[in-house]
Image 1: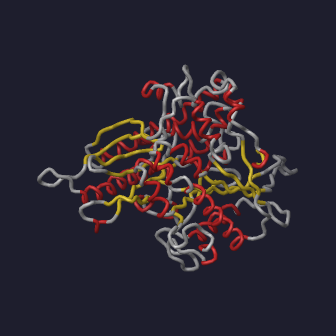
Image 2: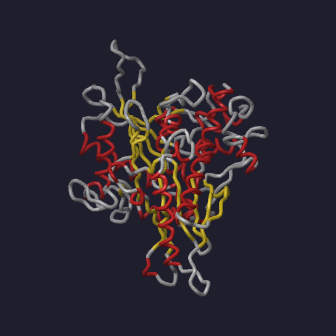
Image 3: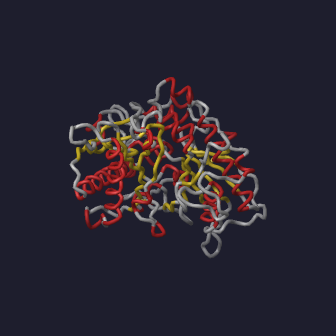
Amino acid sequence: MKTDTNKSGSNVGHWVKKSLCAGIVMGMAMSASTAFAGMKFKEDHGNQMTPFARIAHVKVVKDEYGNIDREETYKETGKVAAAIANYVAKYDDSDESGFPANWIVGGTEGGVLPADAIMQIPSPFPVDPENLSLGIKKAKVLDLCNAYYAKQALGVAPIAGTTKKVVNGYSHAPALPCELAVWNDDENIYIDMLDPNAIFSLFFTDVLVSADMQDPDFAAAITALPVAVKSEIKTMVYKALGEAGYKYNTHDKMIGPKYKTVEELFEVVAASPHQSPFKHVAYTKTSGESFAPAESAAVAQAIINTMSIHGGTTPDGRAPGVHDPELEAILSEPGKNKWRSARHEPLGLPGKPAKNWVIEACSPYYAKMAMGTGMHHATALPCEISVQVIDTDGIADSDGNFSYEELVISYLDPHFMLGALFADMTDDEKAALGDVPGYILDDLQDIVQFALDSEVGGLEVGVSFSYNMLP
């Protein structure tokens, strides 16, 4: 259900008293007899899950005396990430591995080479503490996309084997696509992923508590989806490493904060300001006219251009991290934040009536703070914003056409991300970062609003709303 944020009244005391695990939560939420995202996950890990999974590691590079060569090891992390990206781009997985559909590397649209689509997430840690001239470590992060699974997760297509779709699927777009990270310490080069089981358990709680979960076929099918996604990504990674000639160890190791009960999932959602992983803001035109589907892409690009572009210049000639002076003056840490889009164009995820356009926003200043709590958090970055136009009444005209009255901009809420994915921080780290999510969200909203005012125009003041994510 869509509700005005100011009127939403869910509270922990109300839902804790409910019977949470008996009939409504069947597959991805966990109780004594059910497991997060399927029985295979329970067999491997018991009644718990974490947001991150370590799926492989490669040994560090050593010199002739058996000591780590930190410079060459760091270079090797880039080569490992490139090997994975190149493999995913090279093969049609439906033929190569028998998957239902092919995977692609996000960001390769428009002829971008797979290795160039890898994001570099900065940390505060030096490549070599004994040679600071080598600079800082950056985790290599890949976006992996599969239209077959994304269409189901985003409500464009029914969950396989059923006739039911994820309701309000577009609202989950900032939680996609799947992310994979490659980084190193002095022991190994790690390949970690944002665990799909966690994604579907933490970011899709509205599905977990929906009436659809009382349908055994739907519950079983949607439970199987993240398990399949994880299995396919692991298969591609292992094949990529093997083809590139790497000796590697396989894992399915839980990394990060552990969740042991469904109540813990709901608690972390309820603790966020909007009682949701997301913040949604709807805009209408001052003229009263509807939006054309193509307008969502134009708005997303306007936001990117306003934010600045990593590795490129904006149409008005600004370098990465450089903003209009009027905008910079209202952002947190002026001159330091250096907000930019990780990509020249938004990622286009399956959607209706148009693609869900996802902007990946990064501030090196804040990214270093987050990564300072542990580089295993890399796949929780960067910040994501999605843009879509929606039909609010579901009524078609005489020709069967729908009108799209609202433009919805959705944010992956940094407050939720800190509380859910960074809960393994120390108390000192939590205290140091306590106000940072607010600064980040305010910055992102200020950038978006500046883009809407200066580049788009003709919109009413945005109205925040939410979908019920709790019982």
